[in-house]
Image (cartoon, rainbow, N blue to C red; front, top):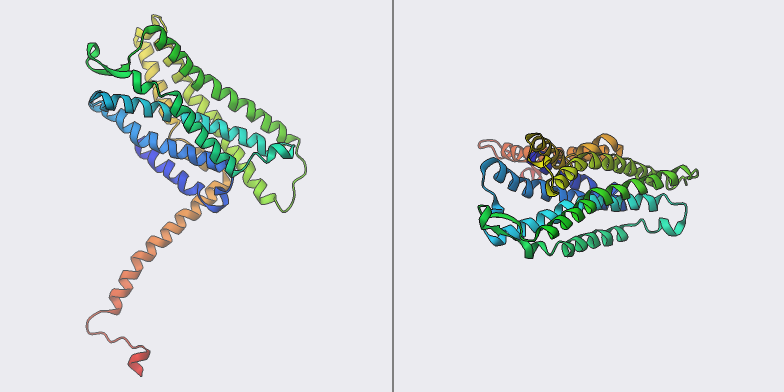
Length: 309
C-alpha cells in the first residue's frame, strides 16, 4: 500500500500539473488532495507499518513524538474529505446558470480555499498538542489525556465532522451540479474544449465522492462504537470488522490514481504523453554517451570541416 500510494499520488501530481489540467480550479483541489494523500501514504503508513508489523510505535518513544504525530495524523486525515468537498462546491459554481456564481470557480479562489481549509484544521486540532501524552498506566501508550465526558464528546464531534458533514455536502453539491448541467443547453464553440475538460473533471470527482464514502463510512461507524459504552467492542467479531474497516479507510488514500485513470480521458491522455516524454528523455540520455564513445574510438579518424581544410 505504501508503494502504490507513493507511486499513484506522485503520478497524480505530475499529471495534474500538465498545462491542459493545471489551469482548472478543480485540478487544484485534486492536486491538494494528491499532496495530502502522498504524505499520508508515505509517512503515516510507515508509522502504521512500524507499529502494527514490528511493534515499534514511533508515537510511544517520547512525549513530543506522541503530541506531534497525533496532531499531524489527525489533520492529514481530515484534509482529504474537505478538499473533495471544496471540489464539489467548485463544480456547482462552474455549472451554475448565474454568471456571478460561475465567477467563483477560478484558480485564485481554489488557492484561497485550500489555504483556508488547512488553517482551520490546524487551529481546530491544536488541543491535541496539549492533551496528547504517554499514559504510564497503559504501558506508556500515546493517548488523549482527558476525562471520559470530554473524550466522548470529542469523538462524536470528530465522527460528525468526518463521516456526516463531508458526505452530506458532497452529495448535496453533486446533485446541484447535475441539476445545473441539465439546465445548460448552449455551449460556445470557442470554449468547447475547455468545457469538455470541465465535464471530465466532474466525472472524475463524482467517482471520487462515491468511493470516498464507501471506504470511510465503515471506519467511522466502528470508531464511534469503540468510544461509546457497549459490549460489542470487546467481541472478536468487532475486532475483525474494525480491521477490515481500517483497511478500507487506508485504501481511500491510494485509489485516486486508478479512479482518475479509468474515468478521465483527458487524464489518461496527459499521463501517456508524460510517460512518453520521460521515456524519450531517458532513451536520449542512454544513446548520447554511446555516440560520443563511438566518435572517440582509438585508431579511427573522424573527418570534419577543419580536417579537410
